[in-house]
Image (cartoon, rainbow, N blue to C red):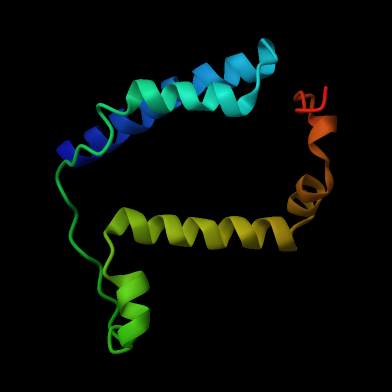
Length: 117
């Protein structure tokens, strides 16, 4: 329970920190590169703090492959979940109609300012 609360708190704080460059680059039309550097400087003292660790998730038939195990399966549960989420997002964007529509829309038509404006 403590880990899930910590994970949710970290996600919430990350979202709040992400509002600074989002507001600055979209509303104030500042450079995204320069504005993205500010949260990095401000949050660097608290970054990299480690909390409780989750157990590794061994997969029975794949744990005998040495290279694949080193890259993918000696990770924590959240890392494995993020790998699965990446594959699911790729599958959604490439194979479904809403995903293809999302893929086809250029960034300028979404209403966000580009660097050339």
